[in-house]
Structures are given as C-alpha cells and as structure tokens.
Image (cartoon, rainbow, N blue to C red; front, side):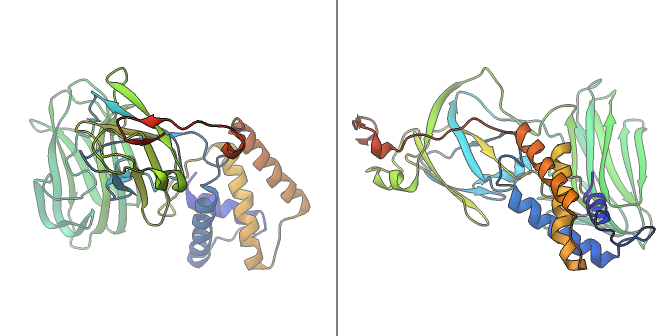
Length: 372
C-alpha cells in the first residue's frame, strides 16, 4: 500500500472529505507530514518494526570512532536505511570480504563517471539524474547470460515522458517501456548475452523529470552480501557510557571487544574500545526504521496488522484538524490492531538483576591493559 492510499483510507474513517469527493493537494500534504511523524515516532518500537536488520562494514585499520548513518563513516545508504534506533548484538568477522552484487556503476548517481552516455538536456548532480529537454542517459553493464535480473527505477516526472530501453548487441531490444508517471518501477529481464546497454531517452524539449536510482541486481540478491561459512567471528560486547569512560585504554591497536552506540541526529556515533585491524568487518544486528517514505507514491513496508494499526492511528491524529474524532468502536478496533501487531512481534523479557546487587570480581585483560 502506498502512502496516498493509506492517507485516503484513514480519513475515510472520519468521513473526510465525504463520499464521492477527493482529497485536495493541501489535505494530502498535511496527511503526509502527519504520517511521517507517526512512522518516525513509532519506528523506535520493537512492536512496530519487527525483525532485525544486519549491517556490515569494512573497518579502517587503527580507527576507533565512527559516524554511523547515511553518508557517515559507516554509511547506511548502502542498505537504504536511516540511523538505527538501537544495536542488539555485534561481532567482528575476520577472513571474509563483502560482496557487491550491483551491476550498474553509480546506480544512485553519486557520480556521473559510470554513465558513459550523457547527452542533450541530461545531467547528473547532487545524487540525481535530471532531464530538461531531449537527450539520453545510459551505460553498458556486464551480466551472466541466462540468469534473471531485476531492474529497478525510481522516477519523478514533472512533464513529458521518458523511454527506458535495455538492448543487447545487434541491437536487440529486450525491454522497452515509455514511462509517463512518477513512481518506483520494477522489471525482470533475462539476458542472452554478457553485455547489456541501459538507456533513458527523452525526445521532447518539454520533458522535465528526475531519476533517483537505477539499479540492476540478480533476482533475490541484496546489493551487498556477507558470505556465510567464511571467516571467523569475534563477539563484541555493548557497553554504556559509564563503562566506556572507565576503560583505561581507548583507541589503541587491536581488534575491538567493546562498543558504545550513541544515537544522535543526523548521525549516530560508534565508539570502539580499540582500533581495528586491516581486513576486519564489523557486523551489527540493529533495529532500524525501514518504514519511512519519501513521497505519496512510496510503498509503506509494513505487515498487514501494522498497516491496520497505522491507518486507525493516523485517522485519530488527523481527525482533530477537521473537528471530528474516532468513535468508541473505532478506538477499540485501533487497540485490537495494536495488540495483534504486538503479539506477532513480542520478544522474550530481557530484564536482569542490576549488577550493583551482584558480586563481580574484575579481571585484568592482558591485551587491552585494563580491567574487564
């Protein structure tokens, strides 16, 4: 379900704008802003965003402090994620390498270097490709003949249209689509040759559009993958600020054993007790908000029980702006939806006795030179 559909269905619960009428652009904009606030506020709840996301990054030898988030030292853009709400567990993997399955160079338009065809009104800057008039944008990619690939395209059309083509040598066109509306497009292609040419073409001076991402991945594959069964894992302990401050040695050479996660805006900070060794890969199990949407046509990635709760909750928050409120029955249905959502994502109680009430003998760590 996309954001616009959810907003429309939510307001129908309070009979806005009325049977047979449509929401105005201003009402949709207000509803979208409220939806963003709701998704962001609920994203820290383990009941709302079930499941653990795995982040993994190559560590820099000797570096112990990293910014964590989009465009940070540990860049979550590679997973299309925001700053994590919390870290559940972590470890350092040694003897493995991160695999990049993306076949398109500069798929997110972070650079124009990979796009060898860039003519007419097409330009690449600030992480997007824009077309103002006729021209073309494209590149050649290498694939495995006979394998299935998924082409994904995120497009915003202000005026006109764009033609998407995928060609083999000859040329033989295996995909040709004229795109006239904004949205996220997805196509499966099965190449018979090892080289494909991807092209976006505009043919009119009035064409005005923007491309945010152009990706081609093997079917079922993530953009970045960490192979299983390769390498050795060294567990990492999560500590609080007090415990981190008490460490007598910080940032010295060697593999990290403890980390402190400081969640902040816009980037979090990850403090390691020791600098990493060359080839170390940090693997973190995190709780992260994957429900955030960027536009009205964006799909909301939530389970059905969660979508039902969000619909009623959004109606509850918007109803006051129209001088209305949910009925007692609707409030009861919202509570039932929340309970259903929470039941499906409930976790084991991890409460423990405070360490101050337990005897604990400190031990000296010969490698770190401090108490553990």
